[in-house]
Length: 379
Image (cartoon, rainbow, N blue to C red; front, side, top):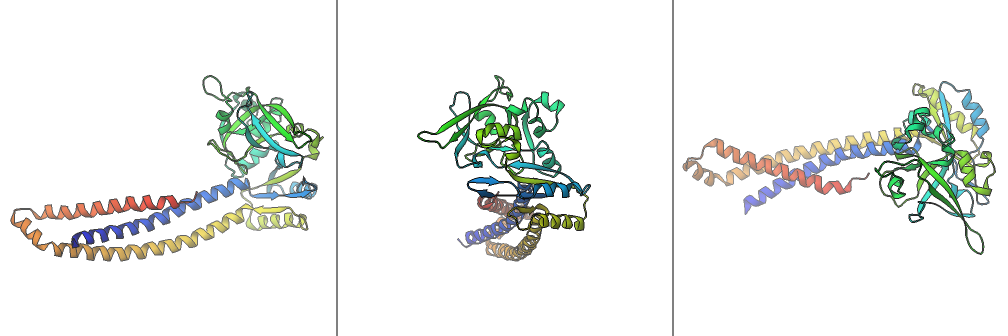
């Protein structure tokens, strides 16, 4: 019985050691994914964001003309900038819903229709935004490598960039299961009118499917959330009906500024300060993505130091404890070992028995440590 208690104590100590080691390693992984999500959500180095509404209508980012004039003078520190609109269902209180349907109108999917500038994905890609293309039209891609630029072609004016999940959800595939870029689907805009709601339907074709994308949530997995659909500004104006008569009336929610990777820290800080000066006394928010990542890096370094010290102390305590337990275990089994030796069992055999015991305890404790800690990982 005493031997079983000692073996249980050894297993518990091994379990705690592996638990701490797993905790430290998995937190490295968590910080890595947090960094990736921050880069993807920000899209590029500097993101300007507006969430202003007046009388139920969204208002664009403030002082865009002044910003463009300033940014044009900052080359080569500022390479380019791009825009994205408010989702179509935020355009007015009169819009109650925007959905996608296949032609049979069987599968309703909530969609955030967002207009983007022709260089949108180019700025994001070069600005380290995460863009993974699931499928795209090879014919257009050969002539226009940029997907967001394809939105401004003749075909793109009646097309939309969709999450890869909707390829199967809307049955936008051919008989061989490949993406069909000529298969139409419907964009339905529901207006709050009396006595009954008014529904406008617009046929649209898929332009590309993204497994992942910057700022907006593209995915190839099923999701209950409202996913994005990217269109050109003229297409957005067309889908908005009477609410906008030209692209100039489309409200801008995001502005993304692509900064040269070789810019100095002083030059970057001066750039941020100048942008904040232009936007002072406005409600436009300036998101400094590198500053956010710097904060994550500082927190990661502090936590890593704490985890490493805790793991080292735990391993030292466990080392001496296991040594004591093993020594006591052998002393308690002196008589049994003497009988085995009298029966002709060699010392190497006895040595291997304890080696195997230590291996089984270590391996099983490691599995339990990983198994019981894994549910607490935050992705």
